[in-house]
Length: 559
Image (tube, rainbow, N blue to C red; front, side):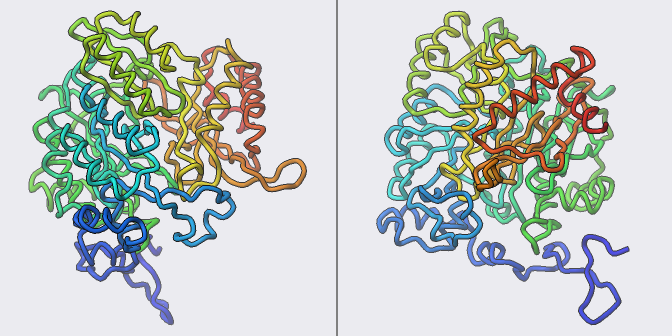
């Protein structure tokens, strides 16, 4: 049988190994335009041109390889030109889709911000981003409407308070996700923050890691309050029966158009060895990752082809030079953790988790939030991988809950607001086909009106294209943007529906990708009615109150 890494030689029946562009096998010839761009120059070096050339010449002077390639290594993507409908997303050339403004992604590793950093983000939003600031499901903050002329000053202000856009995008180590309650949770046994800081300080911006085959997403958390199974590498808290608390290693997760859940390597890693192990996996990916086709270049494809046992052997023998310690699987909590509401910290202060609407905020509201934090004498805020935020070290949580409500930040939100996420969508994204943020906000509003007391706890993830930035495949209801035909036969914005997805974040849960029932689509204008009908059907048909939406979906679709 021909493996995924083999191909036929034209004119021959014999199979020969296909060149996948793996550096470890001596393949250094770039096999696509992205690889040529990275070989021509380390993308990290483009910052010099941004500061000294493009900030003076403006948008018109930017080299295309920098604009649509190397800029990503500094968190910059061109925005979608306003007025271009979704039907033209994959048709128009990039230069026609590009606006002369940028999305800028600020990396917030571990989701950790202090008051000064929050104020700086708010000030930059108001001064340079038309008051935009979105919380992402990767614990980043995204600005829009950024001009290239303003980037030197934006970097100066961010870096003055310890923030960065370095490798916030690109084929490199992206932001490291972490528990938003690291260091304060009563349920946390071991705080991984030192490992996250060590990795970021030592390896973000390292030119030996700035040319990976594709993006590389990481998680380091004691608690399973992060989507660890959908990342390239994850370290999740686990206690070894003899060696004590440490971290269980997972590799090979990722979503998009070829979703795959991460595999347990079966190795227990002590906290002090997490950075070294992370580096070894990253280097293995750099050297053995596929570079021929972009859609096969994520680590998940290598792990899928090799199997986790071979992956561990290569990791140990070629990159660590020692055997890893076998270890147990993590112990999951009784119920999923999302931190919304009021919770006691281990020091007997409180943290308060609040939900904006699908992560959409503004510099003005962030500045007001900073004023609230100062009034409550707290200096720390955390962002979650679910587009929510937490204020830590609160002495009077009930008063803060009331104050947050005044900013439109709900510590006691409806289940619809609590569990709905949305990607950037066609408003700014050049890959999107449909609008997402406003559609999701309208959906929440309608469900709160139509189903105010529905006894449900289900997730709704809204995505503007197949790339799953909002983790469409692992939601109870995943909505993938596409053009659909409405009742009158016209093409219009709509969604393909995924049902019953989820991750194993608590005992008794299993990780499943949502099913795509044939032909199950809805025009965007009919989305509230579609979801309402689906929820009412679930509440009527479920066996009892213990049957989850995912369980009901699986049973219903198997009939």
